[in-house]
Image 1: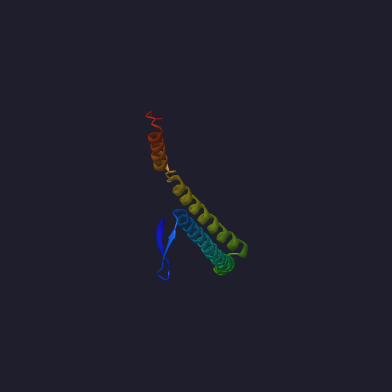
Image 2 (image 1 turned 120 degrees about the vertical axis):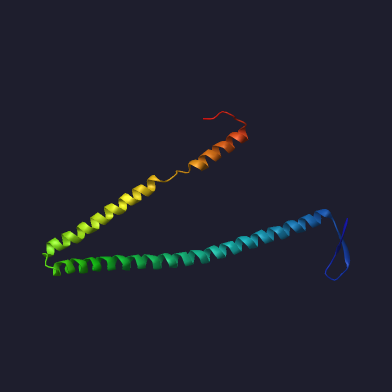
Length: 138
């Protein structure tokens, strides 16, 4: 028997089983409360993410509209320099194609420099060999 002091200061005896049951109930309540808190926080985060995503989508839409309007302004600016309107559209489109090709080549170079997690693969393979006791190198 274990002596336990109650809130009014009186001593009462409780068995180990009762204490373990009390601890289990407290832990169960604590875990349940933590799960509820996590759910509430995740709902709030989901709301914020949805609002942020919507705002970002609208900003992207406005960016596309501004790009299109800017392209027309550029075409008419080239036309104002004395080039026919059809050729002005062709010059601006060609500039965009050239820019897209340069960006694609830069991206290809960046992708070519990726390590493909080779160090991680090596260390994981070594760790697996150490755990299994294998000593051969493949």
